[in-house]
Image 1: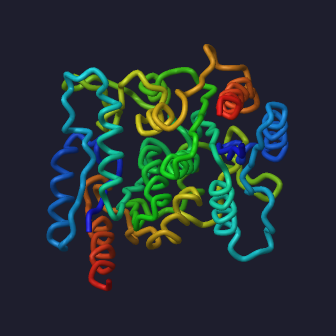
Image 2: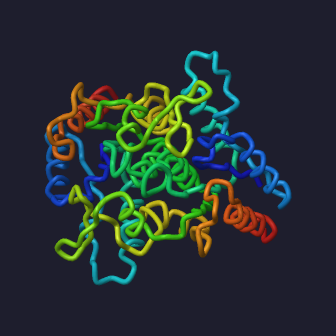
Amino acid sequence: MKIYLAGPDVFLPDAVEIGKRKVAICAAHGVSGLYPLDNAIDVSAGEVSLDIFKGNQAMMDAADAIIANLTPFRGPGADAGTAYELGYMAARGKLCLGYSNDPTIYAERVRRFTEVSSQDGHLVDAEKLTVEDFGLSDNLMLMHALDLHGCRLVTPRQAPADIWHDLTAFEACVRLAAERVASR
Amino acid sequence: MKIYLAGPDVFLPDAVEIGKRKVAICAAHGVSGLYPLDNAIDVSAGEVSLDIFKGNQAMMDAADAIIANLTPFRGPGADAGTAYELGYMAARGKLCLGYSNDPTIYAERVRRFTEVSSQDGHLVDAEKLTVEDFGLSDNLMLMHALDLHGCRLVTPRQAPADIWHDLTAFEACVRLAAERVASR
């Protein structure tokens, strides 16, 4: 089984190293991890970002599954690029797995960034935009995509000390994928 | 042509009204707008969020195209739920159109939320996470999905006074969709 390893990990200072660790964990469980190409592109080429896009899309097309790192990125919710990739894989009928190293629910997390108040029976932020309040970890499209196209979001009971480098929840997803292979 | 109208518009205080305006604009151009069900669910039902997910997915499956409102939502980038839906539609081979009422590029926008500095030749935020700096409006997966699966992101030259209610860029997308129908 080939698994596309999506997530904002590619934006970490040690993006290449974390990719190697993820691929090694996959190998230890008998599956193959495909880590996005962001760091393997010829930067002298003219259309770097387009090359990355095409590389990632080809990797997704080659993969049987996705493990999406949905740990909140630069705001209260998941990285939009990762969310795009989860949608892409769900639509292609691939196995969708995901984890977040932040175990809080979305509505609670929004409070870290903006004032949240109750209005007409639902939560709104400082801009008066509704705050999703279904007790889910993130936007319902992402959460239920996992429920219906794979497995429920994996989260730790408590956030690890280093949310970007702790791969315990990631490895739990790899184990779920490996079990699917074994049960075939 | 049926067009799925994705975006954080569903979180606006006047979410139903803006949906009606969008559907009316579609009709004026001879296409059919499908606005997400978020506001038409029986709230007495047990699994509200799952019902919304299934309703949205069924609407996407029924649609020939998507117009995604990628105006930055609760942070420097697009709403993750909308990004998911764009990925879903791209993977299904549907026509992908999108707009943002914020014409600035992503790297500039991140500066509104966090300190951005240059390190080893690339931009990083306060957490030392890389800031995409390709001169694009948002994450490259979203931007190039539009380029390759539809049309380039539509943005105004200047942000309108009301970024959530100005539908000029939205209407430009509807026009692009209608032209596709006419050219068939």
